[in-house]
Every structure is written in structure tokens, then in C-alpha cells.
Length: 509
Image 1 (tube, helix red, strand yellow):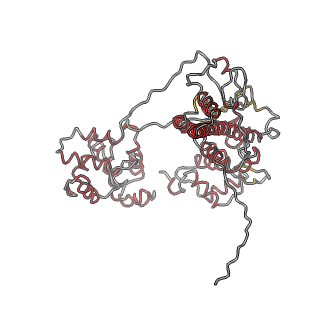
Image 2 (cartoon, helix red, strand yellow):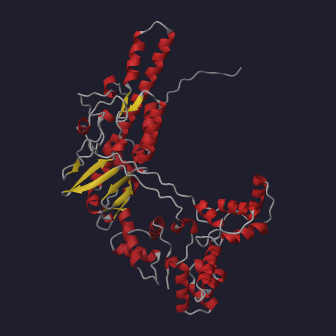
Image 3 (cartoon, helix red, strand yellow):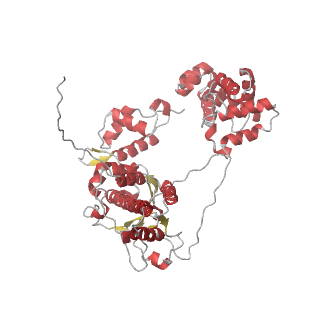
């Protein structure tokens, strides 16, 4: 027999409660998704309701206007470092004991912790709801054009399948042989590659020009041919020759090789290249199609400058006026008094679970609001000079750990806020994570943000000679002259992060 022994092992584990998990999930939701999540919770839990829309809401507009707001923060000269961000009342690691009265609507009692939302409405405000705008899809836009061509029923089906396989840029990246198989197996339609190519040529005639091309080279050729047809007195032969016979040299900007191959002068070559650069390399993204939906960013934070001071406010929709349904509370009291039948006890357990779930959700929304506020407040304190001036060079080095230590929360919590929330400033609307950057030490011994260096790098590229762009080595020397001693490979890394191509690809005639 094998020697079996019982051993005792001590090990430390970190387990999150269901309430903490719920808070973490709510914390990373943008405002639009939060509103949808709240609606889903109200529909799933009858013990939870929105007091604004509830039937028994007896509070008046004047009473709501007296609620404490979070948007009155004035960033004075002495505020920031000494502020107490870590309020024990909102510590997510604390095992909170819920008081029934904390979640019931009280007409004569003010509950600061519960009504921590910005109420920017008055009694005479009009309840405006933006209309939902319906726009046809890009595929519908193309199919509508296809209907003006004299096609057979079979060709119409082939055309719709081709259009349905176009990618977001408007290219047909799927091989024609695969389309033949798709039509046979999914629609029981037998066809040939030649038939598909004939319909594809018709699609090439649709707007925007270049749609349905299999690659960039074909896309540009289709557009040039269209221009030649529409402008018969103009000469696009050199443009077509460059794209058709010198495409590799064109993409690499080897202008000397193109001139030698085509026999064109520098003046002729520059004119042809200017025409080519006017073409659309991504016709599927063309705004002229009228078929692209607009996506709007809804900021959670608003930073204003008033009398030389910064003011921070949050969108009030982050913390809706939720409460526990009074009927469920009374129901629980009635069930608790009657302990005679087992069914009554089961009913009481069910109602208690629903009420507890509602209280947990309300508390999670409240803690989410507080976490957002103290995080943005700490960011605003650290980046005060930037928010006052809008100058990127005023941004200080700041990492997630800096804010986490300042507000007394975990780094992962700050990351959830920074990666999904936007702030509206006098200089534009930005994702919070754009304010975070590491730092380096300049020649004067001061720590500067990498974002400041990137801004200077962008300015150097913008001011360079277009016929002789700066190499990474030359950019490194320019930055060193300005007091930023960084390596050439670091310059290349920042350049790539900014989406700036290498010097050879930035060259212009």
C-alpha cells in the first residue's frame, strides 16, 4: 500500500464578493451602456424602480433641486494634494450593513449618500427626446443603384451576393471561386466565374468610384478610367501608366525610378502624382455615399474654467434616482408577520432576495458615481496647467499608479475608468487614458511627459521640407537640441505611435 498522508496547507486567496463584481462591471460601462444596464435591471427586478417614473413619486421639483450635487468642485490654488479622496463610506472592500431607510424615498429627510447626483433640470424644462434617425446601409445604397441596370434575375442575385461580401473599405477580398461555391450551396444557383466577373464589372460602374475592386491598384485604376470617361479632353494616360506599370515604385515613393521608366519630366510626374493623390483609396468609407451612420461620444465628465479656476461636473445620468419599491417592502413586512405556512416563508424569502438585490444595485451605482468623481478630480488636480491652457506640453507624466495612490483605490479600478470614459474640456473631448503617459528626464533634470515629446516630434515633421523629410536620426538630433535626449529607436517608436511614416514615404516632389 502507498504511504498516504494528510497535510495541512495554508494559502492566501483574494475573492471578490458578488457586490464587488457587480460594481467592477458597472464601473467600466460607458454612459449609454449604463443607461441600458439600468433599464434591464429594473425590468428584471420588480423591487427596483426609478423614482422619477414611478407612480408613487411624491417629491416635487423644488425638493429635487435641493439635492446635493457633485458638480460644484472649484479647483482653487490650495486644493489637490491635501484633499481626502478615500472616503470610507465608499470603500468597496467594506462589508456594508444596509439600513432599510437608506433606500426608501423620504419626503422630509435628506440622504446625502443616496442623492449624490447632479440635477441640472428645473420644473419648467421641456422633456426632449432626440428622434431616432434611420439610414440605409451601405449595401442597400449599392443595391439600389444596381436596380437601375438591366439585369436578369440571376444577375441580380449574383450582384447582391457580391455587394454583401464587400468589406468596410469597399473591396471584394473574397475570391471569385468562393463566391461560385457560396451561390451553389446557399442559394442552389449554379454559375461560373465569368458570369460573376461580368456582374462585378457592372458594380465597378456604381458610386462611389472604385467600389468592388479586389485591391488598391485596381481601385485606383477604376477611378482613373471613370475620370477619363467623364473628362475626355483631359489626359490621364500617365496616371494610369504609373498605377498599372509602376505601382510598386509608387507605393515606395521611388520617384526617380518612375521618371526613368515612364520618361516623364519632374513637372509632368508631379502633376500626375497630384491627380493620383486626389483619388479615394477606401471608397467604402466615402461620406458621399450618404449611407454611413454617425457615432457620437457621450462624455461622463465636464471640465470648465470659471474666473481662472477649474470646475468639474458629471453627467447626472450616471446616478439615476433609484429606490426600492414600497409595495415590496410592505409585502415583506406582511409575510414576516405571518409564519404559519411554509409557502408564506418561501414568499418572504423571495421578496427579501429581490429587495436585497435592489439595494445592492443602488449602492453599486452610488459607489460607481463616487469612484468616477474622485478619479477625475485627481486627474484634474495633477494636470491643472493643461486643463487651464490646453497646451499638450504642460501635461505632466502620470501613470495609473499615481492616481490609484492618490484616491486610495486599486490600479485595475482606475484602469476601468480611464479606458472607457470621456471628458469634455474647452479644448475638445478626450478619452481619459490619453492623459496618462510615462516620463523622461530632460537635460535640465526635469521630468517631462512622453506626450510632450510626441507633440514636439509632430511639430518637427509638420515643419520639415517635404522634398527632403527628416530621418529618425535627424529627428533625434533635433530633439536633443531642444533638450530631450532620447535614442533613435525611441524616436522611431514614438513616430509609429503617432502614425507618421518613415522619411522616404513622407517625401513629396
